Length: 240
Image: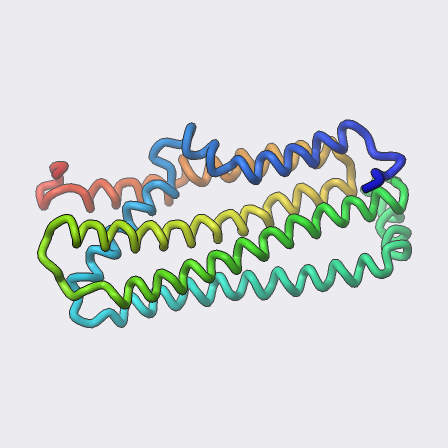
């Protein structure tokens, strides 16, 4: 693919930062975010599966899983609509280019670079769409596994294995969904490319800081951490 004639090294760095930050976020969080919100919720989902096996009727579990499936399906559908809108913009790219760069905050670039920036946003949203659909498939797998769990089997390796594998598939579904949601965050950084690459780099760094802060330092993250501690303690609050 031929690059636009007015693309700069800073522009390439901005795009590379978006790609690296998005694809490497989970690894970064796993290495540097011990006790993160995502890690705590993995323990919560495992306890959910344990509790489900002790229930005679699993209607609450079906309702909860159904809400998750509907949420993922909504984001997948919404992303497809946005992609269709981008295709409409691409079909009239010269007119849109003229309108956008009449705005006072937008930097003047060639039509080729404008189309390239638009393509970056489109690629991010397309990947997010596939992540949402993959998450949906994993949730459907989870529903089948949840439905197949035996009712209150005796404690032992078999029970632990059933709980663990079902919780893993559910957690993997949530990971795909979370990655798709993060795609929207980094799509904002890609949109800022229309203003300038330096501003896009700053936006990407702000997105990374925001995501990490939400995982580690918010009141919600601390409350869920405490919730997990209580789940793993006895009635007196002592660790089991």
